[in-house]
Length: 69
Image (tube, rainbow, N blue to C red; front, side):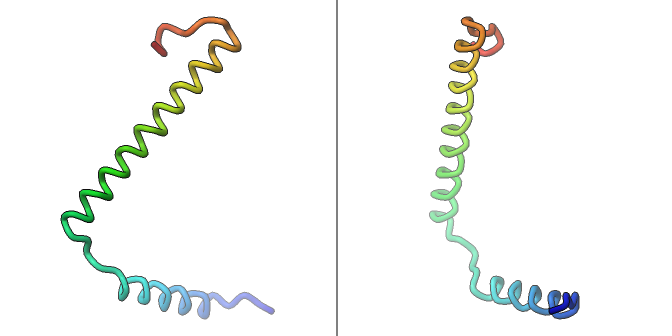
């Protein structure tokens, strides 16, 4: 069993063509819903990271750094 780069490229090109054929441009409503979900997810992850940093800081040093508040 040997690696053949030409066959790998042909398979990749075929798979890429398939993805492009089945994809479509989202409607404005679909785009807005996706954008809202992405923004909310980023905010939740950011807030969770901030809170974890504050808790770890409290555990390790007993104080909250001024920059974190």
